[in-house]
Amino acid sequence: MEVLNYDEISFGHWGIINKENFRREILLEYQDGHSEDGIAAASALSLEELVQKIDCEDKAIEANAVMQVLRKVPKKRWDFTLSRNINFHSNGSRIIVPDKYEGRFALISAVRGIRPKEYSEAKEEKKETTDLFASIISGNDFAIVVSKGASENDSPFSIFPKKENLSSEKAVTIINRFPAYVRVIDKEVERYIKPRINNSFTKISKGINLITIPSSYYEKLEDAPAGDIAAMLESMKCALLYVRREAANRGISYIPVYSFFNIGKKVGGSLKRLHAQAYVDLNQDGHGSTMEDILQAFDNQRSANCCKFCQPSEEQKKEFLIHENEYCSVYATRAPIRNYDLKIVPKRHVEDITMLTEDEFLGLGDALRKLSSALNTIGADPDRNVLLYQRPFGYNSYFHMFLQVLPFENVGGMEMMDESRVVRIDPADFAGKMRKIISNA
Image (cartoon, rainbow, N blue to C red):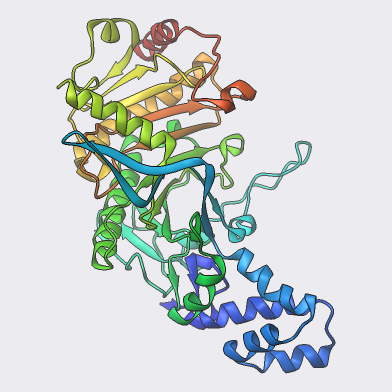
């Protein structure tokens, strides 16, 4: 088994910033405007010597070399005009949680811009069909494999990418090579970077980007057997549990998790093979405004002693229920944010994906296949997102996890300005048509 040397890892790849790749990245920026002799002399310096040289010299281009690399470091930045400290009420008192926000934030990561893409950027150009995951599965490219099916493998904080044949596994979960987060950073480098980046609303963005792939090739959910979709979800569950445990060992307990499928170029997909992703935020600084809205909505349901997913109204079941099996129910979203918006809800009240069983994953896999096929029949765009909403790890909030399927649509200004949508299709009509398509399939 071939293992990539730690010092050979490129800057930011697999979320790793070490002394050597930080130094190489500075040298790369330093090359502009310098002679070959000057570059050669700088290349012979250690990181500490190189940074000291650039800090001491009063030339804009040299100062810019470090600045440009600092701009490439993944950052999490809260919009200070549209964010606020998390607060809650306890025993009649309002409690403000310091250094934890809810609102709008951005993950800024230059390494995301160099990730490979299998879709052409030009509409008229047809790009040759490729499968960039194939080389990882066959063992011809490096990967950090966190889980093989339901079994743990490399640590989520591993620094050793390996070439390993994975074709015998139904599904595996790997570390994204081109992430939005810093996963591992040498202490000396962090000590240098942190004071030059961090402020009240900006910090080095720490987290883990996971990708779950089936070993067999599919492009759409309807192409994959329910068992292979279930295997993907089971592998993601295993990896997330591993991340949660290893993060806890590092003193990290409050962890928002954003899991999803981007299927197709128009909804953010860059690779054609069916795959799921999870953004695991280890910054411990709060959550976004959408999650806050959902947490508040479920808290109201807790106060009313009525989970609306566990106890749907008769109208909800009659008008909006599309499909159900032993383990999950599917509803047309009553107030959709896209035409053909639907929700898949586990029948058991569980807060996150790690609480689901193998049978429940099979039920979800079967529902996703049938729904994806029915959406094609009804005329929804084949490019679609599947979003998995779950309670952040470490939170005690009341929550019932659910999935949302959103076929691609262009949205306008009004929709961007609020949590709203102008739709042309009545959700009850959509539900009725989907029921008929599925029953006739």
